Length: 181
Image (cartoon, rainbow, N blue to C red):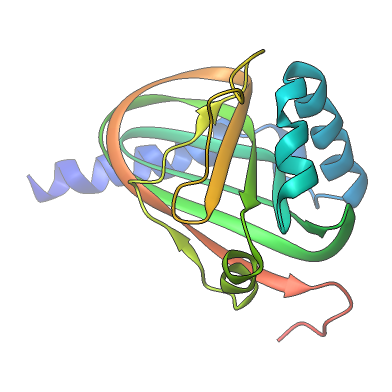
């Protein structure tokens, strides 16, 4: 059974690397983030209230996700306050459960207030599995609300994945202009 677990882990991690579009592995730019925001706004104009009223938001223009029993996801993006990029963020995710496939998607997390935003900026922030994302479609934001100070929206860019898995997302944050450790 131990060999099967190792095979599942290797397959899931390989799926993330192999199925990820090359742009997900390249350095994400502020332009990529702004383009993702424009695409989200076009698909769901109802997000306007989140953009206007949130303390800030972090956008990941392309997250690559893949798995077979064990899976993972990752991407990089930018944190915005008052429409201006103030820092760079990374996302990593590990999942376990019934899952197979790979996909790429945009994820945006809105912070309801300064307290939620500052919690993210402290770095090494995690989002538990109970915080669920709303798939962006026309009208999806109408009844969406904040949960634990955040509202999460995703927009599939490509690929296909079937899953019934459990996992959480882990984030790191670095202000723009900060020296790398």
